[in-house]
Image 1: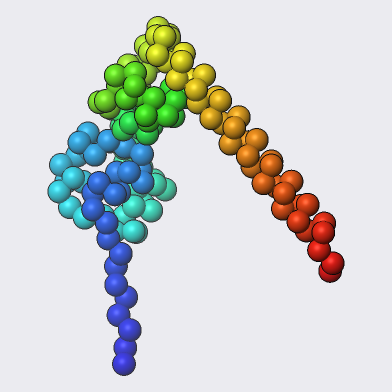
Image 2: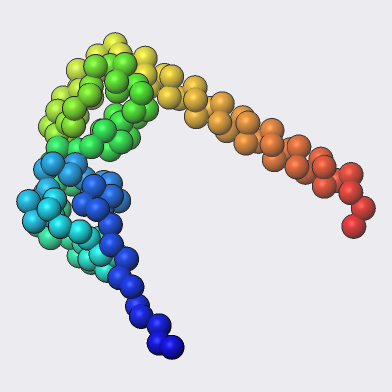
Amino acid sequence: MTSRQNTQTMKPATAAKKLDVYLEATPPEFQEGVVSRGELNALQADPPEWLVELRRNGPHPRPVVAAKLGVSISGLARGGITEPLTTEQIDALKKELPEWLVQERATQAEVRKEAVRIKEKNRANRQAERGGQVR
């Protein structure tokens, strides 16, 4: 019995997500094919010019836009941003600093602060539980 190496492949949408790029902005040959794990690794290790350009200037998918603006994806939607944005558009929003962006950044800061508080509380609880055990 011989084992056969099966090449792991993914849909272009999955590969684009892993590369943090907007699928519709990628070249047609990328959108129409399948991407092997090896091809994905090669794209990450030595990105072609189209990928470098796309990562630099966009358009960027919503998770990347949200990260660049310091808000959640839901915050983008509440701010009326439902489409991918270019780096230029993101920079313009940062300069304009509309009220929704200020509010969403504040909300995001509170969420992060609460996450840290909960993590510290859980850590303290685990330490207290361990302290009560005999080893």
